[in-house]
Length: 507
Image 1 (cartoon, rainbow, N blue to C red):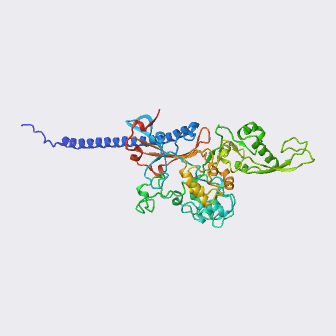
Image 2 (image 1 turned 90 degrees about the vertical axis):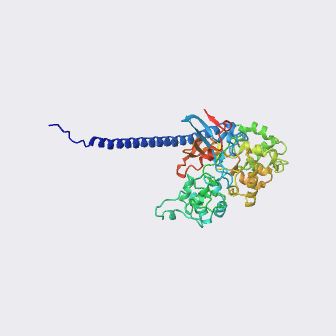
């Protein structure tokens, strides 16, 4: 009897046919997952690197501003598209075949551009909310009028802002104080002091993001398609082809002016002890000027000069020396025949201001500052728009229009604001009033530092404010802008080409 094998059912073959595809699918899934993880890791690495490229740009700008030679008028173009200093700065490191860059950019000076402006913003050419001498000078009506030239400003919002800043709890005609804020569903108290950040203004009754930032949703100062399409996409806009940036270009809490003379030394306080600097003052302005200032101060004890220009067309009566006097017009002298008073006039007159005023404002001051190298809150009239010029106490709207028109056409480089008077843009009386509030030496700068790569990928943006009145310059504000987006498209940042002539490389 022959042995018969049991029938083969091919069970193992079937099992193999099932297991092999499953294993192949698992291997493919694992490989795909690993590739996705690798891609994600590279993207995260690039995002981190682009952020630190942007932070490198902040330090690069601080280093540029730390060199006094770069701050000499005409030495370095800080504001007007200096691509050699601020565009596509190459970081000397190999990022896996993609080159890393940063650019220093700021909002355009026009309202309808779609191009990048390389450079900085002069933060001192704005209304200083942190300087009560400007904001809170004069009557409550005068204070309100200084803010009414801001776009879309209303009286109730202006009064609410002023009530937030002033130190008292007295409610203005259209304003509000603590009783309003404490009655809100989430109560809080007004600061009754200058705001500490620009965003704090959004806590004030009536102030909205649209008023503060306008249509510029991503805060890049460039008119993007979504900011010019009406209500089709965020933010709401009027599709008029211009970018409304709200109040942000006109307000600041960071301005400060460089207050040393051209030699880097403290200015001489004409309200102080002049004898300590007699030789310097006589050599610079003459013996007659020195004698007049000394005589004026001896007669007007306790009445300090409010401005350096207060000496222009000034007069003073001093005791007249009779026989036997010592010949000094301000000396005590003896009595006797001929004694009385005589009038002495300042050698500085309104007819010869071109001869001395610019030099005087560079070397003289009327107070000793705790920080002699800087004076906070002065308004830099260089390039300041009408909305800012009109907020200077003592200027009429007509004069503000004239000054704003002149500053728009004027190149940066003036060492003092003397030209306002020497060129007849304001009267002597007005200049004497506004001189303590203005400057041409604002040295606080705001800018965006943008980190990116030669290949399309993550773009990071850091906003910073640098105070260059300090030595070395200090970053007083820094914020990563990831929450509002990159702002600038990669193609706009990289440009049509990147030639060696267009690049500055950091070694």
